[in-house]
Amino acid sequence: MEIITRAARMQSAALKLAAEERSIGFVPTMGALHEGHLSLVREARRMSDAVIVSIFVNPTQFRLADNFERYPRNLARDADLLSPIGVDYIFAPAAEEIYPKCFSTWVEVSGLSETLEGAARPGHFRGVSTVLTILFNLIHPKFVFMGQKDAQQTVVAKKLVRELHIPGEVIVMPTIRDMDGLAYSSRNQLLSAEERRAAPVLFRALSRAQDAFSAGERNAGRLIKAMQKELAREPLARVDYVAITDAERLEPLEDLNERTALVSLAVFFGATRLIDNVILNDEKYKSKTGRLKLG
Image (cartoon, rainbow, N blue to C red; front, side):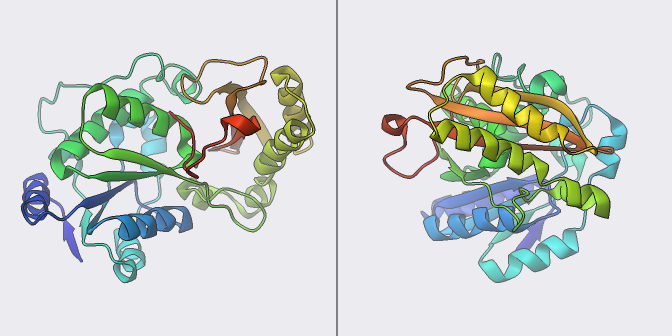
């Protein structure tokens, strides 16, 4: 496994793999790796001839400098986790390798980028879309592996790839959870012990919606109220938003009959903001391939 820090070297290695007709599976991350990331890498290893993992804390998707500085970083630990599971290259560039001096070119996916996380974090998805475009151009992956936990990001990435005719396929893998239901996230490392004990309320709230949907409830407003009631039981939880949207266009839904719905929430525990989601499908709208129907 080689750790690459220069964009030119990463592009050269990717072109060599292409010349050898070896398919590339790519997992974009911001490091602080956990089991959710590792599940993506294992699937990339299964489906691809070569695996590249990027570790880059992208400054352009942070609105507040404090949040960028607080984001956990430990490249040596991340490399130790990736080495045994068949990663060929780690791409861990400095910011100036991605955004050289006087950088002024941006990519935006309008419509999808202004709702949910985009409304809460203005400019976030401009940063995400731009860095993904740069990484795709450097690495030329056949497959890009992303997790359902960042559902809106996967929808944005799919539209980006589709509309800009970027070769490759975005594959969305299920959220991996700890035993108490909390979705694995790099930001979990920032929680205090008390906040960590409180955080599984996200999954309990989402489970409330899933259970009600399975019992026949199709009114989005009532599902949201059930989730809000569960969240209110946890004093440390400060709700940013709870939403039910179409899983492709991310438009708010009221009636969930014959729809695929994305149920999303964002909640603060102290200074740490966590997101999570579940997908609700009427039976005939479920994927026949096992792939997640997002985007």
